[in-house]
Structure formats: structure tokens, C-alpha cells
Length: 358
Image (cartoon, rainbow, N blue to C red; front, side, top):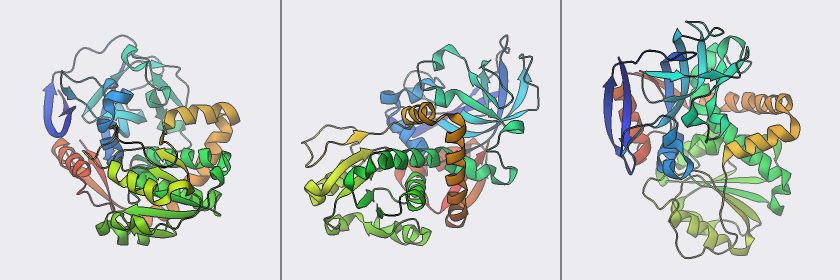
């Protein structure tokens, strides 16, 4: 039997656990038993923008019910593929559940892609699985951190790279909303190492100011009600919150000093992400889609150089993030439902990284 958590696509705090009999394994397919996955605000973003970006299509649900993608580890439970053995472990994109059948293509010692037809219209980045036995990024002692921070870190890494290649649009400061989020911390970490001349200013809720300050990733931290005190210097903004009121306040405060407005995620559910409104002062917000930037950067510098740059920044980030966030391992899909609801309603503790073992 397999179990999967499903959520209502337009009301993601409504959930159910569906139990199904596992079908016969298809020819050439591999059955993965999910060992662990993390639950973060990133998963909430997948759900909030799922229809616009096709995130619901990776692991199809039923009607109004969808399956939220997670990042995690799995073990091969059954295999009809000659090059992939039962017992092998992999890392990649997984459903919030206990099992996933994949159709491996492009198999190498380091990994493979899921060639299932329904996954091909989406970014290939999400279809790749690393084979841990030959994965240079795999550290058995850091599996939890990889699940919690890995995908988010790469997004932050790519945002910093985009800004640096554009000479930061002439900005002296970077203003980041939802600064307690793990992607925001990753971006600030990479910027500190690779663009130290740019001042990093984090915006967060009043209750999270202390945590964000203590993390050490930002030069200054302001509560959302203090946005009006932002320094009037040439700046770029990165919006992870998806809150139209917050973004408007940043634009109105900085005005012509805002040189570029980047929108990335949606950690504030129901706060207007993607909704049209009166035009904002300053530059029009530009959506950042990490997989497209990853593909472009790999094409530009090559996969080996890309991997080396990511790895160097990742090690720097981990040396700080491990002290800032405590790993909390929880058992069972009911725990996953609880953790996802907390991430969705904003009550999750930013100082805790939740790992689920279904």
C-alpha cells in the first residue's frame, strides 16, 4: 500500500491522506520508497503558484485535490531497470507521500531523469534524481540540511549571480522580504561572500526580527511596519513574501532609488501573490524562475564549473546555517500535514527545519 497527502488546490490548508494499492511496476520502471523529505515555505510556494507554473502536474492528484512536491531521499524498493538495483538510494523531487514510480532515462553513475510523459513539459531540473553512491554533493551527515536548504540555496545562489552579472543594476543595497525564509538567508549568504560591497537589508515580521538578526546573514533587519525607514540609496529588492501590500510599501518608500524589483516566492498565503493592482512606482516587478536561470548558467559556464561554484558557496552557507536552524525530525504523514499547515499559515518557527520520515 502507498499513502499520499493531497491538498485542495485553491485552499491549501485543506488536506487528506489517500491510501492506494500499489499497481504492478511498469516495464523499465523503478519504484521508490520515500525515506525522508523536508517541509519548508518553499513547498508552500509550489502550492500557491502551482497552477501558473505547473507544479501540480509533477505528481497528479484527483480533481481539485493536488499533491505538493517535496525534496528528499528515497530508496529503490523494486526495479525493472537493468542498471538500477534494489536498495540503491537517490535524492530528488518527491511527492508528499510514501512511494513514487519513475521511468529512468539518461541513466549515468551519478543520476537519471524521470522520463514519464506527464513530467516532460516542465523544467528538466525537477525531473533529475541523484544516485547517492556517486553523488559529490552527498554527505551522509548532512542529509537533513540538504533537504531543508539545498533547493532553496541554489535559488539564492542563482539570484545573486543574476544581480552580479548585471553589476547589481548600480545598487548599493539589497532589500529582501520574508528575510527569515531559508531562501532569503541563502541569498544573503551568497551575496555576503561574492558581493560584499552590497548592503543586505532584511524585512520580516516583528516576531522574527531577533531570529534574523541572530542569523548574521543581514547587515540590517527591519520589521514590516518600519519599511518607511529604508535608506534612500540605490537599491534592488527581492520579494519572497508575495505580499502585495509589503511590496507596494517597498516601491513607494524607495521610489526612483529602486533600480530592480525581483519577485520569487509566496510565503504569505492569501496576501495577493500574482494579483493585479494599481501600477507600482519604480521598476515593474520581474519574476525570477530559478530553473531557467540554472539552465542558462550551466550553458554559459558548463556543468563542471557550475557545480564547483555552487559547492563552494554551499559549504560557506552551511557553516553558518547549521547554527541558525535546528533540525526537527518527525515521523509519519500526519506530521507532514501538521508541518505543511504551519508553513502555510506562517506559524512555523523559522529557527526549526522540519524533516519528515513517512
